[in-house]
Length: 93
Image (cartoon, rainbow, N blue to C red; front, side):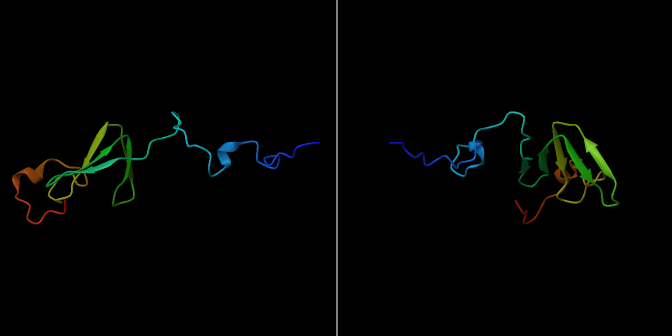
């Protein structure tokens, strides 16, 4: 008697199955990581493409980019540490 195999109709690529274990792929890009600092900037791990208010795109290859949240920076949207000279009342973070 022949036994029937329940998986004969399964796709040969098991990674398409929902219950397939998820493995880390070293070549897959990592999700961007943003760290808000209390009374300070948002730190984003680079490299980063920044779309400026005028529509131009700037590329930063730095390992970490600091974005201003106090809007006092002379280099806005980048942080220039202007927040250190002012007391922030009711900070968001």
